[in-house]
Image 1 (cartoon, rainbow, N blue to C red):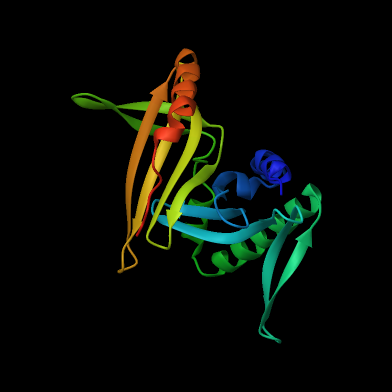
Image 2: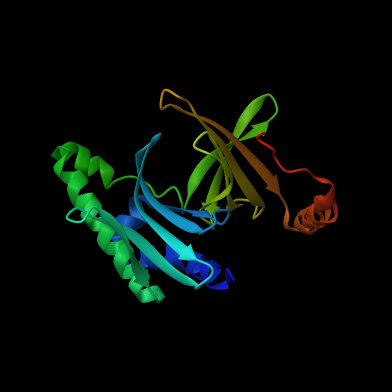
Length: 222
């Protein structure tokens, strides 16, 4: 079993979708989950803060090394797989699902809300984040170079994600960590952390982690 094909598609997916679809470029995002038995890429839109809706999930079968989407047949009541053998078919399928989703959403909002929707800035290309500057928070401009990657999840209660970016002013790297807790009242509590480091520090950080991984203990929910 290999994730080489999965990783290759993940690395090309966001840029390809943004280049072929202006609407997706403005509000579309993706999140990678490599920890599942069948790794997956979730595609979602954010209309405004704390208003996220997933419109498509792309699964990967590591045993057969193939991507697929699940579809529910209303007539038979069964779920079946749509196999997607190459990157072109994957892009076409996601592009089609995205526009079907957006057509449904547009029907449910008035013209003013629709105008606001397509005027949103793309958070995955450039955004401003707050970093701890001691007595005051400091705002920095960041160009995100990866989508949000799911690092850990437990049932439907907790998830931790990361994404990597570059600080535009200094060229430093930045890791953005979000710890989400999902309550029984369908509320989401988010704790966000930013870690900024220079290119010179990156090698030392990687080496420290690699040399000490065996000493760490994984989370045991029991």
